[in-house]
Image 1: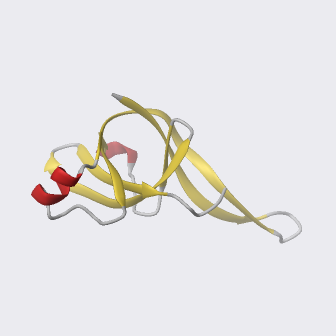
Image 2: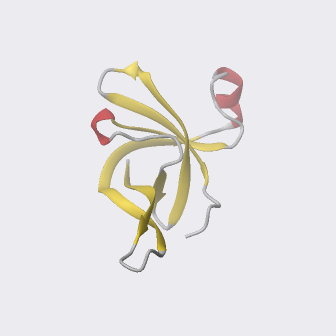
Length: 102
């Protein structure tokens, strides 16, 4: 029910030894199933983090890591948690507001 863009932060040196910081896109148009976290879900699932706003299920082959960025629509979200024990080949990721800048 959603398409995500998967990004990871990188720091590289250019030819003049200046640090270039950027969010590199690893995967575009990632199909995912997502849910908005509700107060009822928080009561029933003790594993939900306080800052999490969404739960998405994505393919394990993406290699999503904590602190990666997922872009949904025009909004950027920080990956707060990656759980791979729910279903084989599927990751359950919790996303929170990403305030880390561009």
